[in-house]
Length: 261
Image 1 (cartoon, one colour):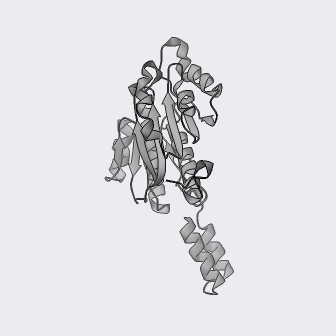
Image 2 (tube, one colour; image 1 turned 30 degrees about the vertical axis):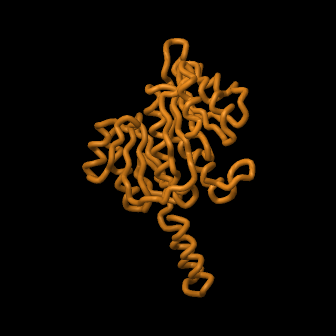
């Protein structure tokens, strides 16, 4: 169920075109599908604006298809599957030939609607090895209706690169910064912009990077104002959080009282 559907039902009740019992039944119709091994939340879209997103890693490919088929039947919006392998994509495509596979981000999209893009989200990476995580964030932000600009491979080993592209940061309502190694780039960006910065530590780096733990701790200890941190390699979480921040700015006013872009 979507907000538009709920508003339509409530409007009919208000106008006397639908009784309370019928309205309650319509709202309550199959909010959850029990597949035996999974409980699918069909009211997730009503609450969060996205149908339940399928995290594929660790799931057997035979369980993916029934989940997707249930989502296709009960939900109307775009369907997203994260951390998906080529094998999972083939399984999904057997049920849904129009499914798209974004190989670099390991992301499957079943596109059922296009949203008008608004505001500005800048997605930044320190290096090219961080791009898969950044792409996941960018895809999620775009699908939820946000204009995204990408700024890749501008890490601190060559500071002139980010300083030469500060024009890309102008007018942004939020910046997503993915970095591995020592994870310093979000602090640099945080010192350059007035908008919130979402730092994404990646598992990119040699031994003492500890699978992204070094970058995570560095970002949590940032001295720059307005830097928040998501989990290691969590591009999806960063993209959705960027959506919430950007849309809040678009619907109200931008930061420091300026009009939103």
